[in-house]
Image (cartoon, rainbow, N blue to C red; front, side, top):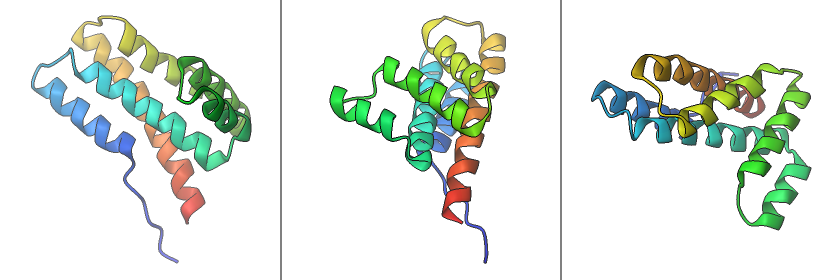
Length: 127
């Protein structure tokens, strides 16, 4: 059976953020990188069927930062990969700190790694 890799919302947002960086727009790019990470976490929650997190989202009516934080912890436990927590922290830093372009590039690579992990996990479940 042939493997199919699906393009996620996170992939599109990463591409948009990279294009903004190329144009020198360091104000909008961080928002796109953060949103890509957020979408990656949501995809992982759905792919891994983290019912407790999904229930919290239903109760609150939206993906609050607290719910996202809880989701990251649960994902790290489920995948036995603590690095996910650090990758998520990079996304939060990108959004909340006005980083110089060179530091932004380093942190953006970590967000891309999170997105790749999310895509890989979701695509493994599809195959």
